[in-house]
Length: 201
Ligand code: GRF
Image 1 (cartoon, rainbow, N blue to C red):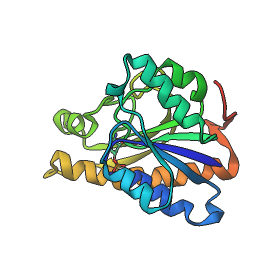
Image 2: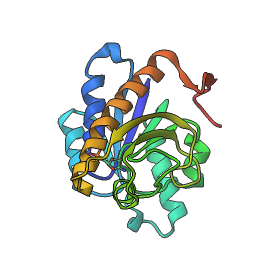
Image 3: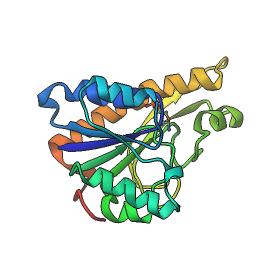
Image 4: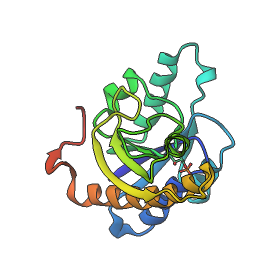
């Protein structure tokens, strides 16, 4: 199974996938890594692993729609079966979802439907929940609203800061991502016991 991973940051989720995919029995291969910005550690990780990279910056395009199409074009060049947003900090739009909807996964550092958006760990701390976690889901047009593929619970400790909590969530996120993508590669895409065809929704 061919995977394109989109990133914006430190790339520890990407690294976990690269490490897992180094074993051919994993069944999935990271064929390219794309970013919306230069100079991020995630791109270095890809280069170190010998995986081709591309960058499509929103600011280089006249409109968001043009950027979205350019991003989809760049992804399409690598003919992925599955696209994984791993800390990709932009919302993909209709042009992207028209081509990759139903086979694009995202990981969110909270237990959906709680705490959508970019402040998942901070919002969980502010609310005072005692358990939070991470959610792997199929990307749709909303913000962290798509069909849930898998979740893992993570305890909140009394002395947590946003950073310590987020780091604990990220440990669970990496394991969930690697386990779920491996299962999809081996068994196909199954949500709630129903087989979902990889491809257009
Ligand atoms: C993850 O917690 C992801 O859910 C969030 O940003 C973090 C990315 O971490 N959106 P990394 O770049 O994979 O290290």
